[in-house]
Image 1 (cartoon, helix red, strand yellow):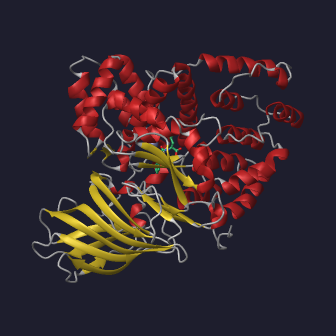
Image 2 (tube, rainbow, N blue to C red):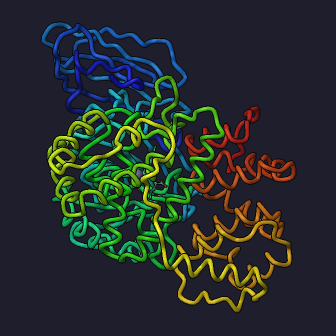
Image 3 (tube, rainbow, N blue to C red):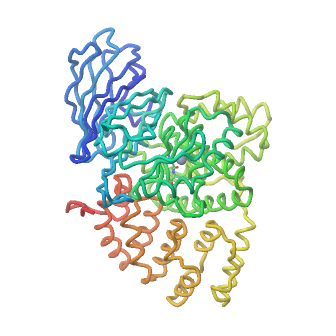
Length: 595
Ligand code: BES
Ligand code: ZN
């Protein structure tokens, strides 16, 4: 049972969706019909999840009207749409339109895009937002195939998590097909002045016109990543693998929508240094999209496995040093998250298996699933050896392909297939069910980072910044450097660092964000105009949270946070708004400032 869905698939489960919608870029509304094929096993109704949708009418397969009711609205789950089904009825068609505040959708004005000429729309379904733009059985344990017909203004193009066009249609009509069963959180749509450029025979990028060449250059390794992934864990099952670079308000680094990863433009650094994010989203084509967490309590099955797989892809392409550095950065993130959760009111969120019933799942989905999940898999790998662990994972992806599984199913499977035959003793329940970090965690080490620490020590002892041995440092060494600067830096010291390394002017979002955190800590006012510019253009939550949280720790910073957020809030997607509202205890009384 999924506590975040009203659906009762054991009575009537949707198996296929035919979506026929019109996207109104002026009214900010999607309107159309969702027609479902049903598999029935008893009961006299079918239940869908909806949130903020206006339901115009519901009919059965033969076109006759069907009786339906909407339950009272729950602030997290939305409303259950119950459609009465006569005996033998196996199809329903729901005609609906989206509400003004549909949480999955972000409607962008031209000014909020790269080229500033055309409006843009993107959707974000994970975790439980698909129900805000399609009436759907919105549980990750349910899978459907889909066909879609989408009409948009004819100067724009539409793309989805499915087979995609590579050129504009003449009339603004696009058709899509996803013939593999996917969980509903992976249904996705983007509409805008989108162009395509191939990067390989089955890989390519979509982006706004001015970005498409830059993006194709940055992501040139995509084809190699797919090959490396297949060599590790079996064939790529989804046909093409493309990436769309979205406008900067996209709330995540990436989202693994099948066939078409949605990505933030903040990975375009100009030096290909931030592309491990693509390895991550690609890895979800196995862990997550092929084998899916059955409920959001099992989220670590999606993300922990994906971080492990991501590291294996980047190790194959870029080597061990690279991987040691990214593993250690991830471990630092984990320690930060553990400390934060421990000081909050949900200490149980540091267990791998979550207990999110009654809560917004998004609030419990943290680095724990990613980095503690990764650390757990590294422990198993170290116990059985890579060859056996890889064989196990290949079998796992094959065995559970196109299925949702729970943590219990995983536990039973790994015991039977790996731990018992290999006579491995493993503190599995301590890792999965208990909060905190078990003592057998292997702390990643990095020789490269040792050298960085040496340079920080030199600087602290008086070597001028410009004389430090930083030649050849990658983004990761700079991140480690910035994260480990001594505390309580004076203005002159910050000036010196910025003069030597030009952090404030950095075009690398990770480096810039790490620097801005230091600027906040040390109240380095010279960087505040840049901080404001960053926070008002970028909506990627991972960057917003530490910056706003840093500001909130002093009265002066707090005032600045409020002032910036008042301008920036209208530019963020609902998931970032939800998080930052909580962080700032923001009470919205005026309408968001238009951009
Ligand atoms: N599936 C996630 C994004 C997500 C998580 C959306 C939870 C909604 C709820 C995606 O694969 C992801 O993990 N993105 C990361 C990047 C990654 C390299 C860790 C991100 O957005 O930063
Ligand atoms: Zn992920």
